[in-house]
Length: 494
Image 1: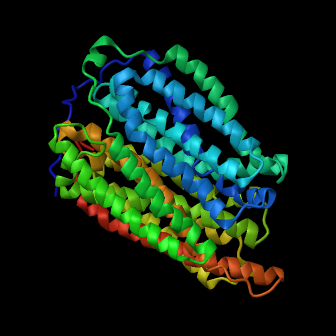
Image 2: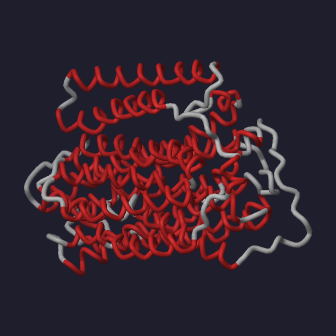
Image 3: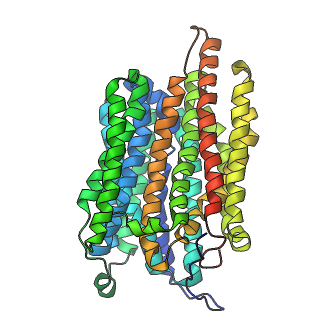
């Protein structure tokens, strides 16, 4: 097990932080809220998008996975660029592009236009989100930094949990034909206001910070290899089921695996030449870090896929509205808010145990959900049956989301913490993409409708949802087991 990393030695009184620093944090977290809201707000709009644009099953997965994958791939190079030219303008540029892409998502006239706009939106999100953590490191010292990160963790959990509710309200208010467009356009006023505030409140890079920035060139070959590998793996996972798993899907999976091996070999060779690789191989000399990376991948695969399954079941299968689909997620949102609010305090007292409790509750909630879907007659399935399991899963998710990255970073040496944080953030988003790809394939692969009646449709979708939920449950169980690879405490006593 990795040793706890020693961090700052906090004094008896917390350091004084300027009012402007807290104002800057609000601006930064407004941007992060938008980026992470868009990981889940679209879920309740998928059935109406499918009807309005006559989109395929694979397109529904691409709308979520394309965003998450592009987001994850942009994180590491964006952080490196921010170190070189200043995080303020990387944040501003990424947020501006995100806002423009949101406009074009809502203007899309077919599924291809929407997927392209979503990928651009994801790339833009991946550009500006690393600046949030970078600014927190620069603006907040010692124990106050831990408080700022706890607030950021709460925003992550709450924004993801509120997405389906906000999406459902918008579609209910503006209608199914055009309401889904407002799901994207809600970013426009927030984005414009945040851009103005960012230009005024965010500090520029100081000369001292610029002198200490990493001036090594970006590992473009590594970026191309890992991008090509992940795309080659995701394309057949998303399209294979829709097309009956032709030979090209199997061959593409093999090519994706080979490209991933080539990426690993290139990173090792690049590091031996004294260069700065995209993913430093030395990080994986810590077995606990390797386990932590897999933990981030599988947990986010489980977490993100829950409402993909429920939204399609609730609307396409059971005939409910988008708002009713969003209401289903309220217990999860409430649990997430409570868990996030308590996670920092509990982490200080319990250390790693808070992650064990969090993943245990997620496993319990998903097991309960699966049993409800498996054993309940589709005609009798109501949101009341999902309240308790979703509340439990949401509470566990809130406890896990905020502190998990701190514990994974604590598995490596302090000088490697920055690189480790970038890798973890990227892997979380990639895990979301993989989860949607796998769950979407399982869901639609098990979707068999034995007739044209409403009961037959409901039964078919419920059975498919049960099959998908058991895969999400499997991801969550693996995440629970991997938590034990992490250190018991982090550097600040967490």
